[in-house]
Image 1 (cartoon, rainbow, N blue to C red):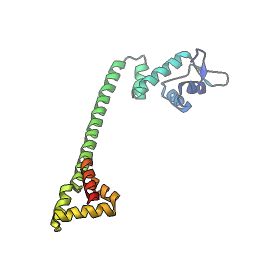
Image 2 (image 1 turned 45 degrees about the vertical axis):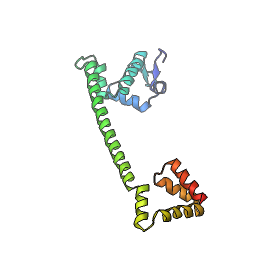
Image 3 (image 1 turned 60 degrees about the vertical axis):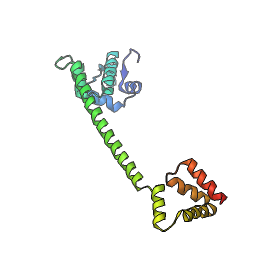
Image 4 (image 1 turned 90 degrees about the vertical axis):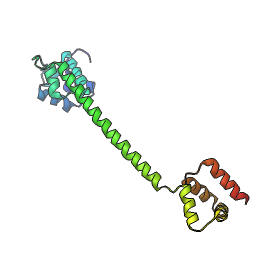
Length: 179
């Protein structure tokens, strides 16, 4: 922003913050206007604009407003390095918590996928069911031939659902069409 004094509305527009945010910062004593104009509007100097830029930098780091006030105060009781180190430690804990959550989600998803695989009817299971129903190899071959003739797309989907490899599906369907 340019160096002449600006109103709260102009500062809000230039900074991209809501006017209410700037008024809140004023109530907290974090960003006080340098003065007021004849109409009693708050007026902010270049030093105020610079202070707001510092506040915004600390906010982007996730520093709480009370700690920003301490850093920007001249009291010197809490150094910015101490506050930044505390924030860094807090971020490290948050990152570790997020990683734990991520691992839990991955574990759950993997278990879910394993359950799906366990529930999935495989080629071996289907063959065992067909044999248990009394079908021998010739009867199963006939079954494939009839399935291919009557419902070729459904036959394809069925073979895919068993997890059959693409080249084996092609061989089965080609053989069934020829017989």
